[in-house]
Image 1 (cartoon, helix red, strand yellow):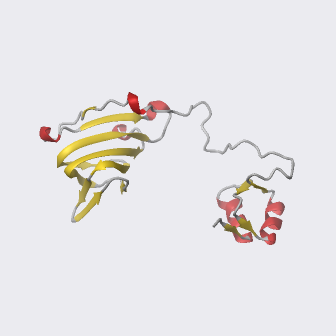
Image 2 (cartoon, rainbow, N blue to C red):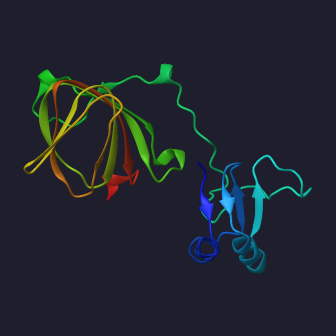
Image 3 (cartoon, one colour):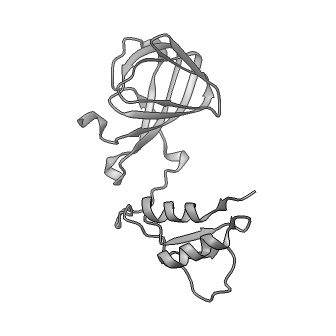
Amino acid sequence: MGQFFTEADIRRLAKTQGCRYLLLAPDDRITSEAMDVARSLGIRIHREGDPSDGRSLPPLISRHTRPGNPITLVNADSVHLKPFAVDVGRPEMNIQLADVITGAHGSPMAAGFMTWKKGSFPWILDYDEIDFVIDGQLEIRKGGQVVVGNPGDVIHIPRGSEIFFGSPSFARVFYVTFPADWEAQ
């Protein structure tokens, strides 16, 4: 079932998000009053797949668009993990990683892949991190809290956390960090 838009929703979109165009999905619903308010606020409403008004919507450009930065594709076959550059004192864990998106790509975020064998190591995050567990189990310990992620799980670790990264068996994860240049912070 789609979203339901009221007059209050339209006013909120216009005020907090500077909305000038609203694209409705085929199953979205909007009240008549919301349509009137949108018209009075200069918000154009278009339903996906409905060319009836004969006008096309403008390109999707916002104040957040960074012209000149291309879309980056990282081909899975091009990813080659290398030994983790930081000595955590656990060579038996065979920690490997590959940064695949960095600030050099014009991104405010960084991303990459990391693997390790059974064990854990301490880490302090000067950045926010989101980990997607691809294979194995990712265990994060923070104080008395223990979180175990299995394949398909997503874990957020907030900036400033003092943790132990680990696994009871092995872990293969995809990570995203913010900001990308956290090492320079």
